[in-house]
Length: 78
Image 1 (cartoon, rainbow, N blue to C red):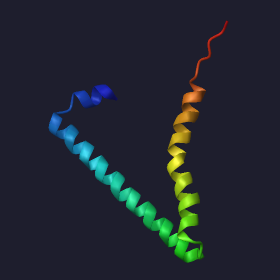
Image 2 (cartoon, rainbow, N blue to C red):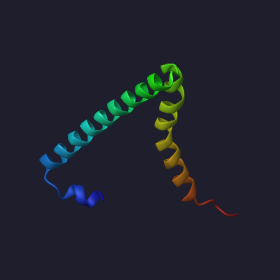
Image 3 (tube, rainbow, N blue to C red):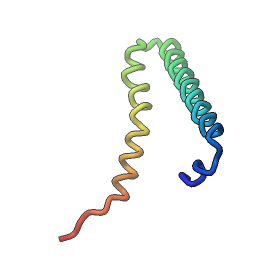
Image 4 (tube, one colour):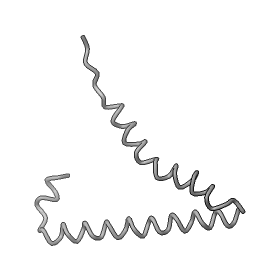
């Protein structure tokens, strides 16, 4: 994958970086807005939604990376 990006012109790499950044920002905005909507629809306080759904959803990618890393772990044998 790294080889793919090194062959692209620098302007395209910069464009893709900022496009990805904007997509992440918009996705986060949608996510927080949806969490607020869930809180209002269910009558659950926003702080509870923030402490549960948002925290679990933001921790999930880290959990996935750690899990994949663990499955590829090679332990030394003595």
